[in-house]
Length: 409
Image 1 (cartoon, rainbow, N blue to C red):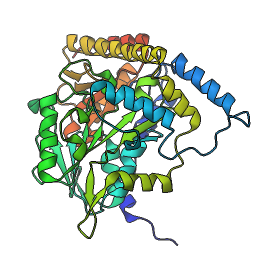
Image 2: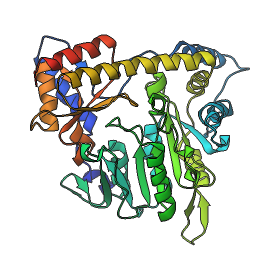
Image 3: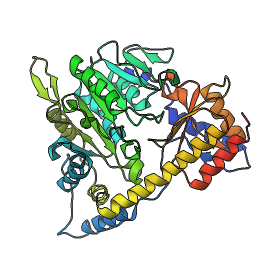
């Protein structure tokens, strides 16, 4: 029999969201009454905007004729999309990013998980806690995490984010090689201001650390002092890779399209001590392991940058943020301590009394027929919290608030 990668054996047997799905399926099979409202997994519910749908229809027609047919596309993404990204996502904010620093992908989850391919297996890692599980699990798979004890991996530095520190993590103590940051944050829905993010960039420059910056939710930012890109901070192009997604802004969770920015100024160290551009290494990785996002999905993404597309995406985001406000106001009014919901589509709820995350999850499921995500699934500091998403209908959001209020905490 073939020997397996024993790092996979170290992982907990069930991925967080798979365990949630199992419990909900078991509950649904034995219970009747009010329909279950799902606010756990961060999947969207609003349809893809008309501008993107029209672009996909045209792209499908292109594939039907010999003259316009597209087969394999460039692994880095079609230039028509990368140029739109440069113009609207960066140049419009005064940020100098070139088209060949952008790599179109099938989503931010894939790239945040795969980026470790170009990094040393000996690299040390720091993550905020709580944290999106993919950041940790993919480093376990790569052999960087060490051993699991009391919910923490021995070679990963955890940076606690709690109400006591306003969910603002302290700078690392171990000078890690790689630091994962996600802002606006999943799962807490909190943010860093421009001065606070500058501290991280300055730290990375002092310690030669690489920041992997997940800004999948930047379009939800409402406050002016919260940066939309880490490259708004001077010097960030020398220390940071940024990940973006169309999933939560334009409903592309099923279409699959996003992108990663790897600046030419960002360098690593080869075994002989020479500097090497991470851009060239990522390009080599993509050309070997990835055939590029589909022509159809990239035409759909391009359409999001038209005047109509931008207006329609804004309407979708405003819809979800109205849900976030409904959740935040309703639950706070019911005496439940909540965070987030202002610059992100997530509400981070402090579990009432002495309930654990999973106990509160079970209570909401059994008494309210409502599905959230237990905070402990995002890391040890998530214990005692639960995440709800605003990716639902207005009616379901209002119903969820009403059901929770029935519990009379």
